[in-house]
Length: 241
Image (tube, rainbow, N blue to C red; front, side):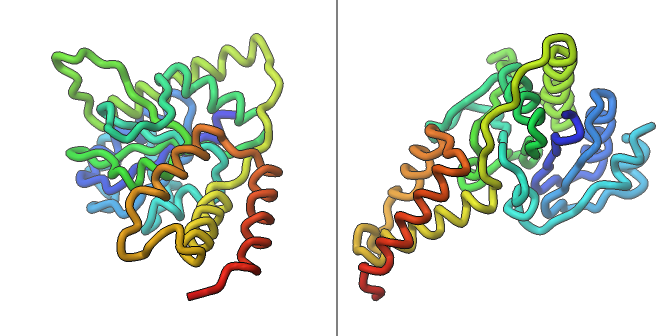
């Protein structure tokens, strides 16, 4: 189950933080690391901070976009250092660990996304997740560096994994891949635009609110197929402008 958990680091600015994150991962039994558009490629400095986790660095993949890193995942958990105005389903690290391990029972690939050291993840990036993880640190001093955040969340993944070893649970329902969900949103926006519901010059926040609606619902694979079929049927009767 731990092998199904992928740590994704977005826009990392200092390769030493990548090395420290790799070390934090390996101490908790996590191995898969994906780097999205890092400003520094991990080399000597990262290897020094990784200590005995240089194998995690060596096997890390580098991709250009977050969508590439998440394409084959069915559960995406995005970390946020603060509560945003964006109202999204939220989990504590402990709840996130339980959900990730339970879904991993069925072979589902789970991504945990961490943002830039200084600014975290953008709202657009956060919207690509199913849930947000917020670490309830001391509000008077809530500063966590990247490796600390990775260590905290990875620890909860391991604790949930160990709990399942002693008390097995049934696997979660099957969910679609991230790329399939994103394709659905593209299809939905296209149909709504062609119908005139969304005005290209003034799109507003319609798609953001619809994303939030479907994220709360957590569409299962069969449900997503039904909705795609509905959109395809409607598309035949909607004039293309």
